[in-house]
Amino acid sequence: MVSDTVKLEKVFDPKVLASGLGELVKGFDFSQLSLNDQTKDDYLHLDLAPSFGALTKEDVKAMDEQLKVMISGTMRALEKERQKGESISWETVVSVMSQNPLLEPFEDEIVRSDKLIKEGNSFFKFDGSPDHAIVEQVNSWFATLVQDEDVLKGTHIDINVMAAIVAQTGAMVNSLGSLLYMKEEHQKTLVDIGVLRFPDLDNPYFKVYRIRLVAWSRSARVLVAQQDKNGIVGEFASRRFRPRKSVIEKLPRKTVDKAIVEAEALFSSSI
Image (cartoon, rainbow, N blue to C red; front, side, top):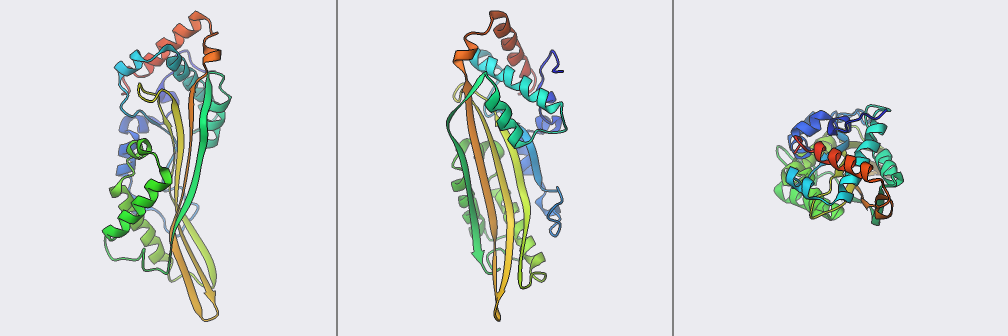
């Protein structure tokens, strides 16, 4: 049963709420990943993290009623789903929000994937810190994959984080170099995060998105020559939801007032 009082802590990991998404991303130690264990869940993994942007308590109070009803209804639906298990998958979040009568998707769903693949081993092989030019190239590739400045700012996957990701990709290439033979492919997930971006006064909608980055290495022996390819595979998906006015306008006044109180109380001490 969903509680009488909706709280962010009942939907999101309290550790994520306390530290903030950006700080968790910036502070993650990619060097501790197990390079040869492709199944180990030791990468930067967040099923659902909140992102508040520049949202303030005063902004929430200044929002129109329909936004507040949408926020309250969404948190109630996600809390109900969270009670079924430890976390909420990306697919479940999109499904819950798509089926919520208080919300409606708008604009096309964004789904992009791309690979930054290099022939040979030299691009990702280096001693010590990765070459700045290589990091810049990977960072530019990632920005093109996402194409959303708000996402880049919200996740803090910036040039410094990308340097750590490039270094870890290089470490995997070095580690697997002596193990690859004939035709063999290895991959290691580096990042897999799902994010719920809350509405604010400038962006009056929910945005739910997912970022996945995987280090990839492949070796194929053709006759007497060995062909090596290494790189990073990226996936980005995003969906926007706004209040469904036709439904909210028909809600009883008592229901609307309760939702307004709940939405404002959600942020009384969290942002």
